[in-house]
Length: 263
Ligand SMILES: [Zn+2]
Image (cartoon, rainbow, N blue to C red; front, side, top):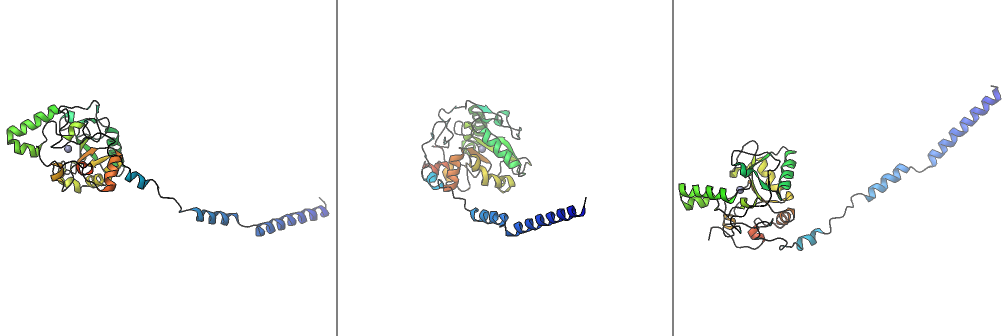
């Protein structure tokens, strides 16, 4: 290669380099434009405009309160199941830890409730909250025998405190469950409320469609002492509505008479 060609090539490289430098310094920075526009558009999420409407338009007549197949059925000491020997048509054993010390039959629940129960127990487990099923569905026949044994051992007054009369137990709907802790701590005892499981359940059950059916301080309404372990499936819509409005019992939410004792 001759010298003149080398000078030409060097001159061309210099010209291109200078041109490129001039272009870079004159151009506006696209990065800055992008980031400032992102900033101005962030943080402007709108609140759900339907929240208020949904709260005020909740339909309390959506499901029957008397039909034993209804997820809103209200069973208490003045509202027996009808018929008293009612049995759910579809019962399943939920895929959650089971406490099999009781009757095998008590490890079934209504197929209406099972998916919600399974989801709740599964989600809790991811937070190291470990539930097991102490008691689910109890048949009319089982309740006849349990209650009958209580009456013959302790008399009717004690029996009515210790167990429900046949046909009056929410467990007969298949929509109620007594939950325990896998650790065995405070099983079917009021101190369950102070365990991590009891605390989690009180705070989160409504998200899955459950209520704590027998809350603290409501014995004169429900007829039962505080049972922080007993959940009742009513569906997410009703459970959430009760949570948002602060209604603690089905009787108060639906304006039903208090049911402190049998009639
Ligand atoms: Zn129970």
